[in-house]
Length: 480
Image 1 (cartoon, rainbow, N blue to C red):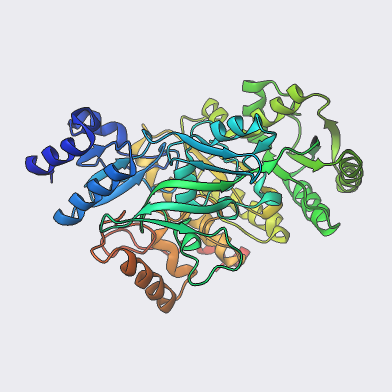
Image 2 (cartoon, one colour; image 1 turned 90 degrees about the vertical axis):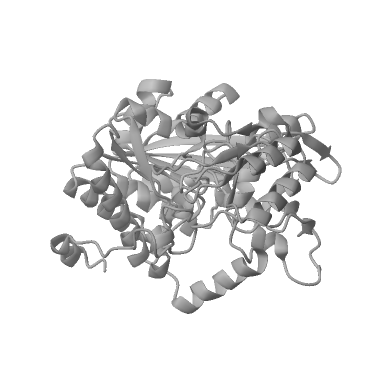
């Protein structure tokens, strides 16, 4: 239902006439994020200050209008989709880096600051911001905090929550609060820890204080090819078992490598069944020792064509191929459906085999590119959305892949969040008591349920989780 004209008038007074969008054609731009489901908001509001954010949320609370905080729209779980209509609270006008403290190694930023822009600004002080999602050229720090985003270098450095020291937030009643996690001996609840990763269901974020790190003196980046994805997976386990935790340990299968090489010409071996991109950093002596040990483990597990980047330009090209992999898959099909389940590293060969079998059953191409070091899968189911009949197959295949992840002892998400895409599957992992307790936290922050409603928790009004129906394969693989 469209918002009342009186509400729109009030919103325009708060943020300015040009910063409230309610034209049906313009709203279509905001109806989805990077997931496959969409729903248009009733209005898009673009605040420029925390006072404006607070005033907008107070109006929404007064009229019980849903509010969905939104960053750059790069999320992959439907978190920014306005499935109940209401206001899409677009935070990208708030994009100032307010402070970089080179002594304390911190930065204070607004939520609309683009991830890569923060590291570029910090580099002038010999610092960097560690969480680096593949979408870092577009995604925002506020969105990263809302989803607790990861990235290739989070294997060693940790995900977003490990780098957020405090946040200024606006709760569902429009009140503004600073929540801090920077004191190791703090008293009371860790509200910052609760709010990071809450996917916009508890608050809107208006400022974030983050930890910055010193740029390491040396960085070594190695590309290795493997005959199969199974041998590459075994090499990953061997490296970690040897006591080495690289800064990054990424895997791409043959489908992905072919698409990446055709686009980036980064020197990826297209004859390989899979490739690993391994990076270590630190002082020069340590880096050399670690890379030598990694080379031994890779070759012992059938690795070949090992190639270490000799210049920063070569390193950047190797990483451009990895971080641009999903976009390169557009050479195969124009659309993709991506999940990010996590399994124990020792289960990588089994889960990748299961993913391949599911793709074959549904006759859908699947490209794997993922954070192998921490078992965080990214199976990309490739399809053409213009074929409307195929969407049900795609969703069913994705559901079966997630079910396999859970049966192999994994989790529903490592960095993309639960959002809309996985909410129906939460009972696979959590008991009714677990979900009830989580909902009590939600109710404590948002009693009227206006903040990003319909996300994370199973919604009785939407599709419920189904047990996959391929009993032949299920009985062979003993997944469930």
